[in-house]
Length: 291
Image (cartoon, rainbow, N blue to C red; front, side):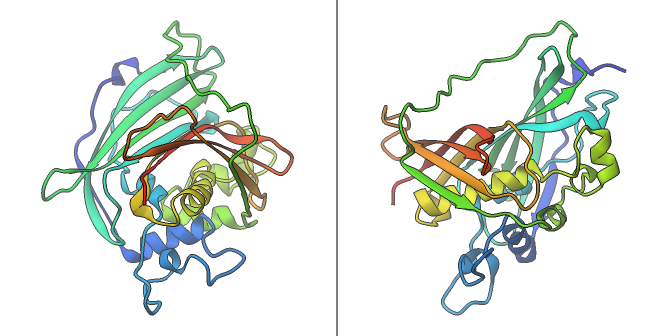
């Protein structure tokens, strides 16, 4: 069965998603918080440190906003599917424990020739008031599903600034990082099962793209927003190469000199790369509110 093109525009049924303090703590550890120095980032890794109130990493938004099942995309070989793009907008900081009501829809199925790109958008609202909490946008690339004659999709206007980064920081990952991150909900065997990842063309299990995304988000939060989640408004990027658990990630950041954003926010472009220079998250944008 080919792609189910009729899924485009269909919205999932509303789904309530709740999380606990333990969930947000586990997520923080899963994306490397406290690695190297367990006494750093205590606001994100503990709930009972004296004088420190628990806070939530902004990238937990992609976990909190997960929706229920939507229309089937077709008979897809899951070993051929990789996360291609991810973005989110936070309308307010996330609580350590909370509940949202989520919906999502497929916004496009694009023909990339060698494969198909399936784009989705979701919203998470406060169940009591209906006020927006999170908006998420993502895309998945499915190898071998292209060639159906569809639109290739919109082009990005992102350009790497022609100058040295304004900020550059390197964060480590652990060899067992995927084993920890998967406990936040993504149990895809691609990240732990060598037989499954081998069928997908990988020599060994790769790190979750959203784990790389979370490590990157920590670097952006601490470097650009003084570790204050209330200042972290939005983040987006395109996954461009796999990461092996245990590799280090360097995040390069360029403050937008053209003044995009508003009087109440600043846009910063970023890329995340491995030690050998391979870019693993490209076309990155983050929006930061002033202190």
